[in-house]
Length: 133
Length: 133
Length: 133
Length: 133
Image (cartoon, rainbow over all chains, first blue to last red; front, side, top):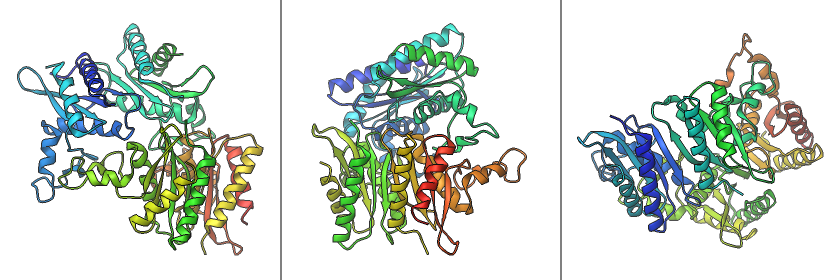
């Protein structure tokens, strides 16, 4: 099973609406089971540096099948995955990336959001996720 | 002036329809005046290697304000721009990338398409362009 | 709106004068609204490693429309943006990068300075900024 | 001996004037004896993709102490330096890069120009060179 473009577009649409509801400007990226980019949008005026970050959050979430923020808990100084961000050409491990699972719990992709506080980023990613799960 | 997300999404939609009409599976990328990615979609089953190529075509078209295929005419062995592809982190200079201009002729972004023959790629990019110009 | 070369050169000139007044040797970079390099100078004898850092500071400031030092406050261990520096091909998040805004408050570019203490780097960037705003 | 910033700025100024005289929009880069960037300007409206190319031309000319176009003669298919462009993170070997020598013939830096035909690029680089030699 793999995330479809139709699912990715539904996630992006819901995420954009949530971003607007929060009065934020977001970059929203969706990757498939192979961690390849399937859909992306940059809202007008959103941070340019968050284009790349949203994609890295999505990939990071799929690479390890967990929320990016959970990895960030483990990558702190003294932690078991200290500086894991150096792998895979650069990971982003703060909140905003969430895996997408099918009805059996298999990870079929991930969504990554960047453009505001990490709390808002995560909330927008969750809104996108809910549209397809 | 800069390309808006609304314009980029209209271009992507038209390009997807053209891709379907041609019975092809495409990756479609749109960049703004600063060559930053604004919108992207990967049609289900399209070549994975063309995700990156579609983005590079869009950036290349914006970098030089011309169709990617026109640059490829100049970058051949013995040509004036031989191996220009090594610049800017890697250019793609075969057809499928087209600049987007505003009503005054200013370049405000570009569209890049990859997934089939370069003729089809270019035709799909043109269909996307027509939707917003 | 976008930063012009005339503005960038005025900023560079003022920054060089401030650097001399502080008895420092600086690298000074200016990027436009698209985070593309518009002007750069390396003062004779300035640190070679700061050539790249000055450019990254300018890009980082434009990427997130804030002073680089403010991002560095958030990217510390335990902070919400821990290790954000791994994105965008490498960010620099200590002081010395400042966004440039037009009269309406729109970000039209950024200046980045590196070559001395971060306090001096920031002071020189501010001097450059003042020449054009 | 090394190229000074004063020399680099004189070269940039002369190159900009020549670019204007030719009715072109150029990116102009100057590197020192260590192939490090000393001065750079992007003329308003010049190709964004030529920012990187001008810098690569300058570095390439210093790396081998010869005009970039001369290297391009040797890097063609079947030639002795075929695809040398793959080295050093990416070389540019078509005209527009020229070494700068001191009065004893020692190479102390290089100038690279990109933004028009390779003939114009080279002419503008030569105008910059003449201002300091």
